[in-house]
Length: 390
Image (cartoon, rainbow, N blue to C red; front, side, top):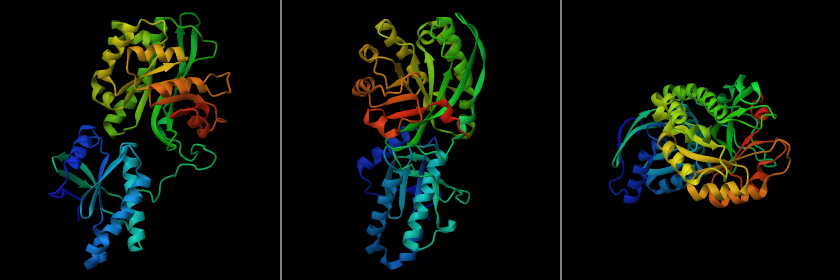
């Protein structure tokens, strides 16, 4: 049974397959515990001498099951006669493990007529070296029989899973230049990927009262420090527990573009820089056409080595044109205007022309996922009250 030790791929493994293994390794998925081996040995054992004539029928079923449960950017590779490698890029390590168990159990039930845990042989890859992979067995006895399927009615998001990170909330007051002591709230909300109706990341959202319309550079720095203070304990838990969802973190351009506040922010992240590069999506706020173009380009270059990717918050189509002349942002974020009930269709369409990643933050509950998809959004965070629903 292929469940532990060294597993060697077929001798005739194609060069393209070796390149895929190398890409999986380079992407850090192995280090993150998101690459698994699924064994079909129990099916082969029951089929017996008929395996040679039946194996392709079995593999056809395996590929269909994986295509349904592991859509792109997940990758699966047939390593040998009874082993398939699955690299889960769309979910964290635990959810990837659960998905693999669900697929294996469904295949065993179909081909064997039973779904006993003793038949589920799952391993987690610990290293890739050329055509060889090393793996350790996974205890699947505690894995649930199924995971929640995406909602299929009227384009609504699933309501039956409140992810644990949404419990990371904070509130208090801080002095602002023009308003004095001002209340704030920090929430961690799930980011839904609209084409799959699944959670692909989390976003830290800092909420101020509606009357706050003007912030000084010192205010921007203080708010960025506040947000970072909320992020660091999460990253520390990531380091200890191996959690792998990306984290979208709003950071003010005023705090990142000047050397002193930028060094103060990045200096706090030193012990967690490896996790930051894997998990943190820096969402730069406070950008607009009046910001010097060269300064935008320089600021993005300064912070890129410390984070996974850099995105930009925009308010108008002019923002998009100006920003993308200076830097190749990985995505665009749009904030839903509290007083508006209409989707900012033209803004989203313009943003999508520049980037494949367009997230809309704080969308009201009455707006459907399908509407957002039709207007070119790719990701969404729902308003904080919805995200925090018990």
